[in-house]
Amino acid sequence: MLQIHGESRQDWIQNTPVPVFCPKGLVLAQKTGDRGVLAAADIFLFEDFRLDQRGEGLSRRDERGVFVPVAIGPRTVDVLAALVERPGELVLKEEIMAAVWGRTVVENANLTVQISALRRMLDQGRSEGSCIQTVAARGYRFAAPVTRVECHA
Image (cartoon, rainbow, N blue to C red; front, side, top):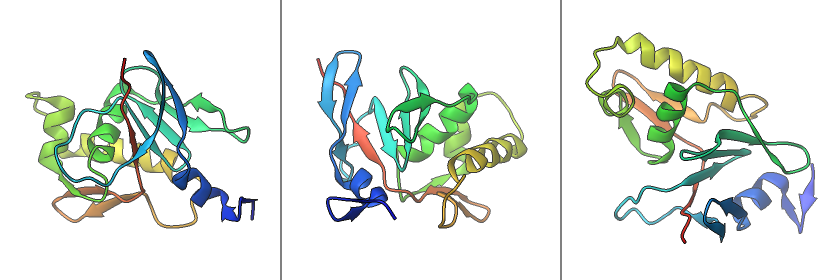
């Protein structure tokens, strides 16, 4: 196992502030943890992924540590955003559907298809269970730790 400063690669990634280039400049990533008012973040970092809602979409960190864009549809990005904005919390199916499809009437199967696509992508090479947990008949929970980055002028 790769060790960096005495930590596993995964622990090092999760515990080290990450310089992130934002449209307005460079900031350091801040860990989530304050359950107070949720501000809209520009970028979310989790495991080897980066979700940039306003720019590149979803990217995966390659073996050199560089984030490379992942091919993913806009609805799938919206579903992922609804989950990573509230890591560790149950997000009801109705909340996700309202955030992604608004007032458009869609079948629950549409959400199931998007979740399945996310799991195939995010869980690839993951040793633990899925980072998206199903709460039967209620909704989903994003189980991986998330770092929220807000870009400031």
